[in-house]
Image 1 (cartoon, rainbow over the protein chains, first blue to last red):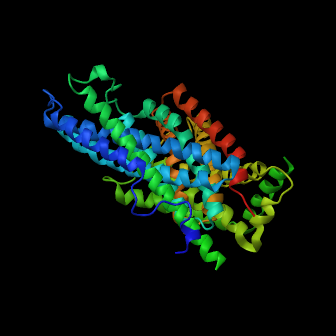
Image 2 (image 1 turned 45 degrees about the vertical axis):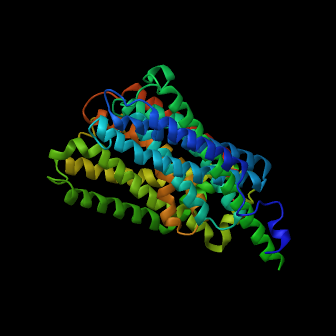
Image 3 (image 1 turned 180 degrees about the vertical axis):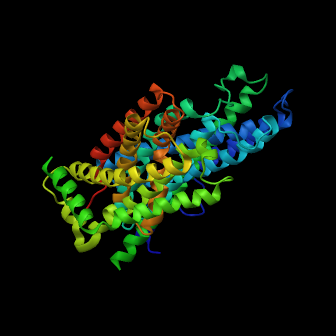
Length: 230
Length: 221
């Protein structure tokens, strides 16, 4: 590849600053989760908390990034915002899938069922479908400008759905099983710091993957430009 | 406004002349009733009347998806979609015209399907005809707004038949849950709760306004 194609992009082998931050957090996270006290009621399975909730946090972060970047793309017509939106959706779907996988394992151990139609669970499942549809729409739409425009619109509609779905599920869904909040006071003694670090680790992982994904999109578009110039 | 009326009139006249979409939707929704009969333990009989509201809305959604898929497909012929995009008015009016035409066509199908449901499940629809029609209209307004909006999008994608349901069903959940709940309340002989109607009205307003505003970014030459 010529120098002009890789201009402004990091070498594939170099580690970005976000990668170093993530490495430090992962080490701290592993240590804190290992020494965190075992819940007296739920036992060892409660430690899924340090995977499940941070994944949920990162998933919602991804969906917010997608909706906001999509709105900015429609406003400014700048493809850089579209790259951020697409990266946010992909990383968001990844974390959402991890959340939907870790949740039932925890639920079977504590509630006795793999799946319940709890309000928060249902709304997250629907968001997962919205963003899977978003990714399908991107890959099936021809033309990068049109794909960017369509997916920006779908991302905004997906974000608008959150309050509407929440209201619908509160009205017609089953009783809530998730706790109302997960403030530090609701956690047992010694669980606060591991929980906080797990959220920070998921955020660091989110931003690292987001940066890598944006970088990949940049490389792809440089390569397409290069091929066109030839 | 003129664009709205022109698009509405054009769609209804072309449907009246060919009647292909209407007939396909009708036959398909009746086939869905047949499938329900063989899929339900005990069949599509009065014994399963408690499931009828949900099944009725499934039949409505399936037939609507079939018709909505064609709504913009026909505009691809002779590149009519590009001409629509060049109409000398806000593209939101094209959306409103298309969505209203879809609503009229869907309503005709719904009247037949609801009658068939009333016969096979022995539902007391005549006793609650007016409020039931109101609930079905509110649900269909949301269905047609979401469906028309994403039909314009899916027609520009590869595998448009597959993309339409994938795009439409997630945003339909609030409308469907409220419509099914309100229909069930009516068919049980009760009154519709305010919260169901409120959710339907709020969702409809959001979808029609969002559709009108964002259609600018969906319809292109």
